Length: 211
Image (cartoon, rainbow, N blue to C red):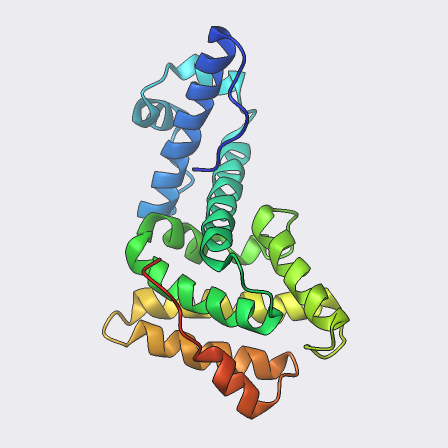
């Protein structure tokens, strides 16, 4: 999970540990069933914390589950950042992001199930994953790599296509996920204004290692 600066004293460390346990439990529930009607008692038991501890950190289940989604999206963004370090071409960043997502359906199933079930509602939220995507879109437009358009429209197109790919990976495990990701990445680049021949080449550039 994403990390921040360590708490400075024992009380803060225990408090942070309890919050992480609750968020982790909520992430597991979202990944396994997506059922947010589960009781607070059940969440606390899964997190192995006291029932009363819940309200020391969250005012409601909705707030907890929202925090769990944001946590998962930030982890997704951090993982992508680590893998895409050194790539400067915005088009290649988009294509590689699609291909990494297809691989992560196997290597990070909990994370990708959360994206699958809750990602649509967070496409335009101010979370780490969205900020990264908008950054790359704006760089691509400023450089002339992508056609100039409202970044939120481009984000909708890319986000919807990515979520469709994630759904496809889980709904059709028999398909070649890497090939599907390459094909969708090529189409996404063409949507953004990259010439067809170049979109085809960029979408197929070598992608090193597993996700």
